[in-house]
Amino acid sequence: MAAKIVVALACMVVMLGLSEAAVYKVGDSAGWTTIANVDYKLWASTKTFHIGDTVLFEYNPQFHNVMRVTHAMYRSCNNSNPVSTFTTGNDSVTLTNHGHHFFFCGVPGHCMAGQKLDLNVIHPVSSTPLFDPPISSSSPPPPTTTIPAAGVPGPSPSHAASLPTVVAAVVSLLVSLVFANFAS
Image 1 (cartoon, rainbow, N blue to C red):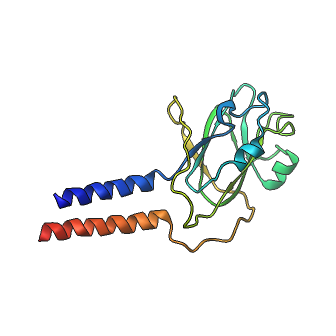
Image 2: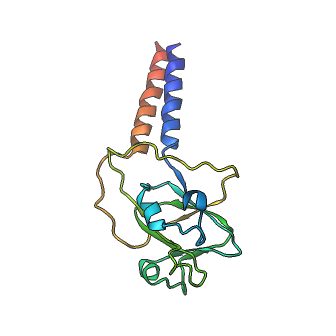
Image 3: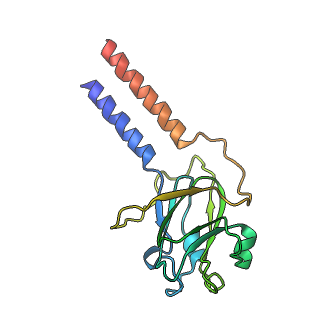
């Protein structure tokens, strides 16, 4: 019986570690658009982005796109040489490293009208909450694209243990307890 409890606890710890990443729909219910007058700077300022989080750009591909750009391109709304371009209308980008990630709509005039986004992925710290509220969607998740952050420096790195490291240590301990329980 004790072994079953330990295994159940190990499963819960693993699930907890897997559920730490969040999915954010850019612009919330309005999505990625110029029509709703969404303040994307304000939208991003209300979120805390972490490595592994996903940002979802939902938009009408007849009228919009998403371009990943450098900081200089972002500031000037220069769409001449984007890092990458997304055009499906249901684009998912997983944030894979710390720092700033810059996006805008490459349709002429849209970036200047405010359809641009600067996401800052923070360094993990021991006091960071485990969960950010995910955005639910009635449609299946789109394919995910992973891209590195732009070359803009972020805050100094934390030397605290990461959550996956702690989860792995706890799971290892629980597994050794299960085997010790079977041996006795």
